[in-house]
Length: 409
Ligand code: ADP
Image 1: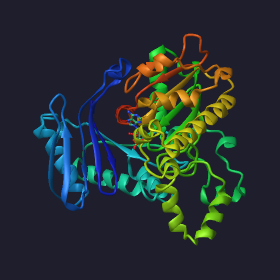
Image 2 (image 1 turned 120 degrees about the vertical axis):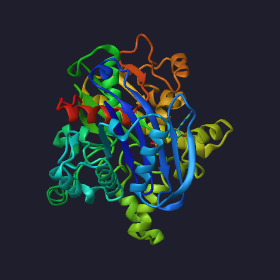
Image 3 (image 1 turned 45 degrees about the vertical axis):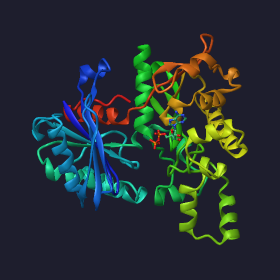
Image 4 (image 1 turned 90 degrees about the vertical axis):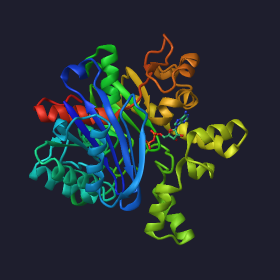
């Protein structure tokens, strides 16, 4: 089945055309036929980039004033690149939806009822859900006969028990406003956990895993027998690990102190917390791990400190989730940093022998931007690098939803 995967932002659309079905999933040979993006929608300088492997990617700059025109251009470019002969070959569309609140624990075919429920969740993700939904409206208009499926970042974590998702706040805030841990990056954590079990031929209920998605945004999840039982991001993606520009866990009273000292408004503070913290805030120079590693190697103390804080936080969470799970079979690193930075993986696992985690220095150095095991043969916990592929998981879920097949976590 040919599936168009869409990730719509306020002025952008990322897309992939993926061929998948049950057999291809089983043999891990489902593949991306074409991919690309449209940026700066709403201007006369929008760029449309499309790659149909093995051909080199093509980029054009043109006036694209709205998402409908953007998607029409995307589909035309798929025809021009011979990825599809005709629009009718696209059999389903899978949409990345950031927030499904407590209403969605699985991917759903979007009908009137589901659309209404997604609208209810807009309040929880005002910066993302409206744009994700816009992608749906536009795709429905252009392809009215084609089923559309919503795949939520939060759905995987709906299996968390209340002890993991309830905050130590007055309970009424949970009841009245839904303030609780939701967790994000669910498609990534689910994808790498599935792949781990596929590599070792294990059933869902045979393994407990800790999955660390370290990209610009970072989160880590404890997975017990295929179900997320705890995750580091919370009510919003602010909580947990130190990230590119977000601070992760911080004493909430410190924020009030800073606000009063610098006379900051709520808006100022929100900007500070989203854009100027984390690796960027500590180093004072960059949110890019590559640049920080290069600067640190040249003796830059602030860059070194940022990397140390980042890795120490990952290590603390590995310890916490080892305790939450009781027994851990595998630890997986993914995301731009997790896949490409052996130094970060080594530092995050340093001194965890007591927890059964031993990284092999040579293997670790050798696994960059590819799948591979990096633990020593004696390590009780297998440590793996597995490149994430959220679009592939969205395509697989879309296929299963359309065919009425169950969604294995
Ligand atoms: P996003 O969360 O936006 O999808 P990515 O998963 O692409 O982000 O991760 C981006 C991060 O990955 C950046 O901090 C970048 O520095 C880091 N990264 C990418 N390549 C490397 C590398 N070779 N070494 C270290 N870090 C890398």
